[in-house]
Length: 185
Ligand SMILES: [Zn+2]
Image 1 (tube, helix red, strand yellow):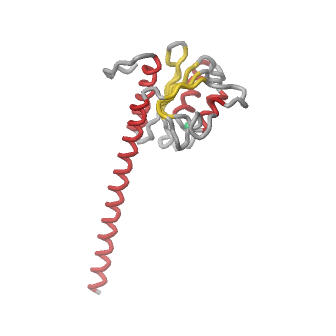
Image 2 (cartoon, protein in one colour; image 1 turned 90 degrees about the vertical axis):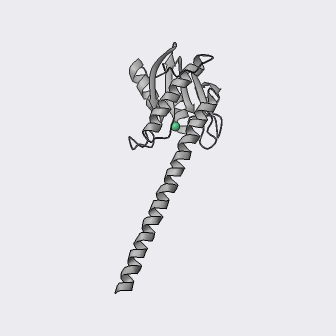
C-alpha cells in the first residue's frame, strides 16, 4: 500500500491510489502515465503500468499487462470476482480484454473522451449483445488521475517545443556556415 499522507474514504479510493502509483512509475519511464491494479477479496493480485515505449509494443497497455499477470498468478483464464482499478478509461482493446476475462467490476479514475470504450466513444464493458457485462464505477480520485495525465502531456509539449527551438537554432547555424563559406569562395 502507498502511504502518501492522503486520507481515503473507502477501498475504491485506496486501490485507485495504488493504480496512480503505478502510473507514476510509467511517467518516470517516459510512458503515458496510466496504471492498473487488480483486486480480489480485498487483496491486490496484480499491478502494472503502460509500457508501450519501453517494450516497443502498441498493445502493452496497463490493463492488458495487469490482466495477463493476474491470470498467471491465479492460474485461471477468467477473473470472475476481480475488480480492475485503472487511472484512465480503457480503450477498445483493453475493454474487450476485460470482457473476455470476465472481470466483475471496473473502477475508472478519469474518462478518456478521445479513445475511451467504457462510456465515452462506446461502451464495450456494458454491451448487452456480449455475453459478459462489467459493473462500472467512474470518477474515483478523478482529479488526481486527470492532473497526472495533463502534467505529463504539458511537460512533453514543453520538451518538444524546446527541441524544435534547438533544431531551428542548429539549422540557422548551418545556414550561416553555408552562407559564410559561399561568401569566401
Ligand atoms: Zn488500452
